[in-house]
Length: 352
Image (tube, rainbow, N blue to C red; front, top):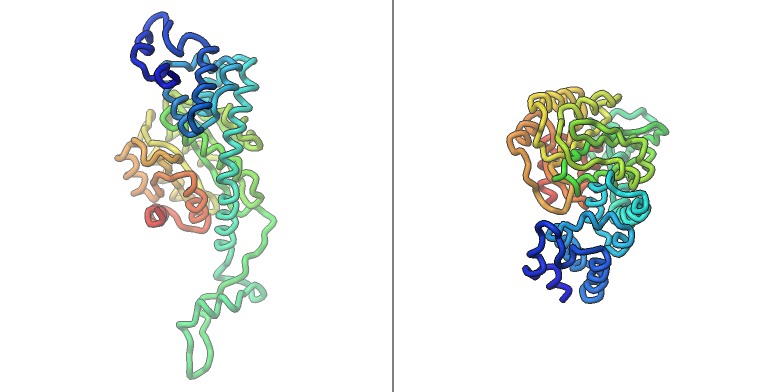
C-alpha cells in the first residue's frame, strides 16, 4: 500500500487541476506515508522514495509545513530542495529547515573534514621544503638521498647539486584558496559540497579561504564561513550564469597570485560572454594563479557540460575535470603543493 500510494497510476492520475488524489492531498497523509515507509524500508530506500514523491507528486509546497518537514529523512536531496525553497520558507518552518540542513552538513563534515585537513597540511609541508635553504635550514639526510646519483667515488663524496631544506613553520598564511561556485539549478549538489569544503578550509590557519557564489550577480559568502548552514541559506539556486563576471571578481580579490588556488565549480554553460570567461581564465593563469575548473563536485559522475568551453579553458592552462567529494582533498592538496594546469588534470585522471 505504501508503494502503491506513490507509484500506482490511478493515484497519480489526479495531478492536474485540483490535485485531490493520492499523497498530494495534505500534509497529514504524507506524514503517515513517511511513517509507513520508514517502518518497512531501510534508510537508503526511504531517501529514494522521498525523492520520487517530491518529483512525481510535486509536494514542494508541503515542505513549507514544519510538521511534515520534521518527519522527512534528511539527505542531500532534501537539503538542496530546502535551499531552493529558502526564500519561500515561512518563519515557522525556517528553524526546522535549519535543523534538517545542519544535521546533513554535520554528517558531510564528519566524512570529509579530517581527510581535507590531512591533505592540506601534507601538501603545505611538501611545498614549504625549499630548494634554496639557508645553511642552518638544510635537511642533510634528504639532500644526500636526492643527490646520490652525483656520488664521486674517487673523492668519496656526494656533490649536492640540489639542496633540500626543512619546512619553515611560518606564522603567516601559507596559501589563499578562492572557491567560486555556480548557483544554477543543475549545480545544486555541487553547491552543497563546495560550501562544506569552504567552511572546513576556512578553519585551517595556514589558509585564507574565500567563497563566492554567482549566477548573473555575485555574492561573496566569505563572512558566513563560520557556519555552513548560514552559507547555504545565503545561496540562491537557479537563475542565469555569468562566469566571466564571477572570475573577474575573483581576480580582484587575489592579492598573492603565485600563492593562490582558484577553484571554479561550474558546468560552463555560460549565459554571458564566453570570450570574457576565457579571457579571465587566461589572465589568472598568466598572473600565476593555479586555476581548477570542476565541472561537478558530486558523486553523480561527469555531468552535462559545455565541452567546447572545457577544452578551451584546459588549453589556456586550467585543470578541467570532474571530481567526487572524497577525491577533492587530495586534488586540492596536489594543487597547493605546486601541481597545476594539465599536469593536475592528468594527475587526477591517473588517481581515478
